[in-house]
Image: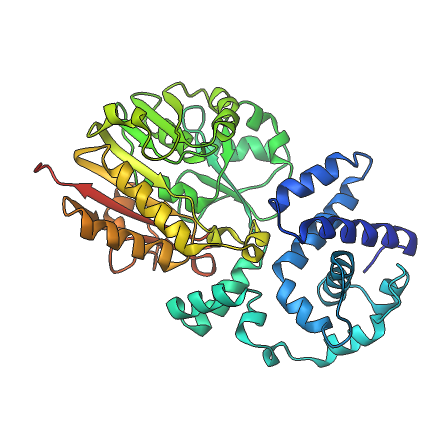
Length: 435
């Protein structure tokens, strides 16, 4: 089904215009889309939904779409590139016909494109094209998971993510929040693994609810919730979130501590930490202290050496595990070797804050072994006073049972095609009491 020709033409033009802005991959897609809509406040919600869905579909399946239209046309500008991506996506996945596309003014190959889409078997394409991944990423994942599982993983990454909420247990139970949101017109189900989560498969205006305004929940992927549970945060402890960002995991730790003790939230970005302030206020959390760091070697860290009960290093990474939400990430130039050097340096610096007998959790939202097991293996080889702790033991104590999610080394590894979460890796390490 497709809208009347006049409406279709306007929507096609808007989707092309928006996608053209994104194809240089200079800034995050969600931020660019937000700016585009903000500048066009008269766009209706249906038009916005169409533009966003189409653009994200094109970003998710860019490689496949390009391979489909390649024999018909080779675009010579970003605008033409966007036009052909949008046209191919609408024909292949949007339910549009060649006639509907022609009605928008796209007359230069709609019929030929439809014939190619109908005749072509996608299995004729190489794995990296079917997976809609750049060559380097596909090759890394195949080396790690094998071709069959890489295709399953890639297909899961090419699906829109559900909306997961984390209940603020300082204010409400999960059951009570579920009932309250139902009363506000939103049906959600408990997340399969996290005891703190609720899930809605379809997107909805959950930031506009009364419950959100009252600080009863935060939007947070179930995988992120599980990573935070590995910290085993307890009331009265002194915790450190070394790369706090906008504070999602910090907030969870603070609420697990029942708003007692202290969580030191560090980040190199003042802007991210400033965005954190309203979330703290809304959640009713007052045991968090925020600090801007120059880098991981900032002298402000010295007085904290050996004092923290637990330190979380949610390290800067490629973000490969978040492609369901951020499909533009895979088309950017990613320096994995450079990220790995940064991750090793941050982990070593953060480990100095852990007290004897304390816990260190290294985590990323990456699926790449180069950013995960390779980093922790190197750290453990250089720091014999730290030993890994099996994630199963901790998760069971936290009331979590999740199959096929722990590596032989004891790390939590969440995979979208198996667990329905974003892709996460986390290893817990305990510091020896002998110093």
